[in-house]
Length: 326
Image (cartoon, rainbow, N blue to C red; front, side, top):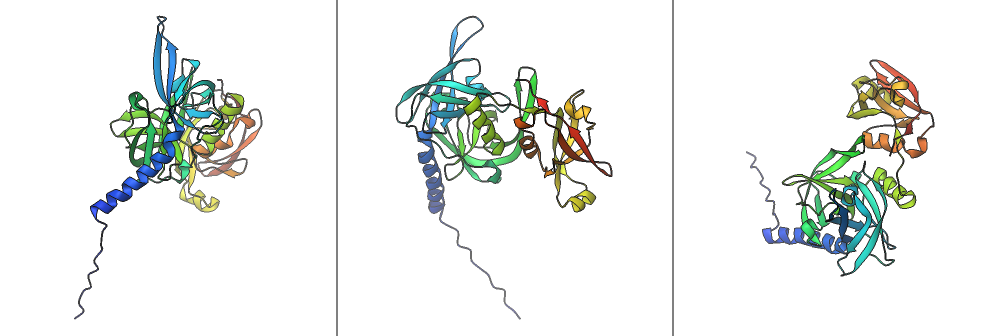
């Protein structure tokens, strides 16, 4: 008779686990706190009174550039004050704002700031530890920690009559409160992977991801003060490819068109609801972020070839994107 063998798994003591967790959070906070500013913005109310608002901002260059949420500085005087952890209180001006991504770039009057390191939200995994640093209710340098609760959320934004969904938004249970907007959401190494933007409920915070698309937006705001978007006139979402086309194309994901705006470039090119976009000018498309990255400002007015699956056919359609009105 064979006797079963039992293997004893030794788990770390509760104190050791807590110390390890604490070391990660404190190290990330110590690295990031010098790069997070408390922003104060003045607005004029419809009745003429001046109202004070605030939020947070993240230093991204030594020579004074910060990134924050567009709604933090919306309706303000194109400037304000930024308080840093080292006690400095600096004037800043709004260099550029993009409400459709809820991002804005500021320039503070300093050339010796401590920039944060930007990470890549595309590398995040659900359950991963994240640290939020901001100024909830004006309490500067506040640190909270939690996990990535979900990825791929969408956040509705609006600029005038134009509405857009920010894709791949990060959901976290790290405590966020009014004033955290524009602050940093960082990974365990203190690299900024998101800009905190909204509190959707208790234990439900949202952050705009730092990825290739948002880096391009921030760069354009720094140099041009605005971000030009190519407009197609479609709404869509990521979905699996039908098995036959997955085998033929050697991939699993695509973008399904769920809405086509009348008289928009996509409609004029013959794109229909239900079409599955698999490529743009021969480059593979797996999701909305990738599609948005391929249809950048430099494509405005330039013919673009879309490869789509429709029923049992693989079609190629030519679109000419136009500029999305500011």
